[in-house]
Amino acid sequence: MLSPPILTEPTKVVSVTLTLDQLVAAIRQLDEPGRARVAQTLLDLDRQARWSSFIERLYAHEPADNITDDMINAEIKAVREEGAAQRYTTRSH
Image 1 (cartoon, rainbow, N blue to C red):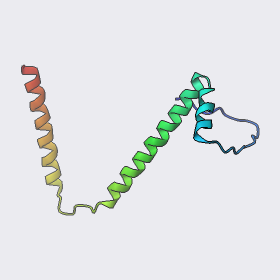
Image 2 (image 1 turned 30 degrees about the vertical axis):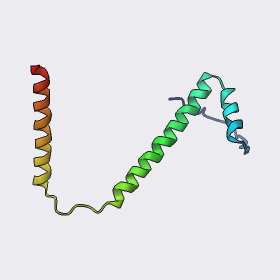
Image 3 (image 1 turned 180 degrees about the vertical axis):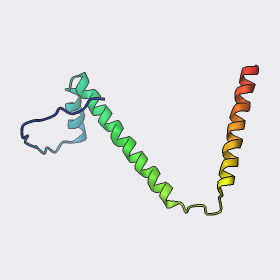
Image 4 (image 1 turned 90 degrees about the vertical axis):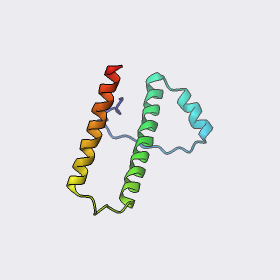
């Protein structure tokens, strides 16, 4: 993943208003590493948004107070046994 260059001197921040078409045209003018950096940034933003949405949905659910450690351990054991049985069946054929 490309990281932004480390700036040692003060920089001037410029704000520009572009239409979507103008932005796409500007991105097309970038070299391959520049376009890759834009693409990675967009993917990172999307991933962060999806993760935040997931966390919000998770916290919206009420916790289940009626689940015991024994129930959780039994579920883990059942899933592991099912996975082992599937792997055994796959190898047997």
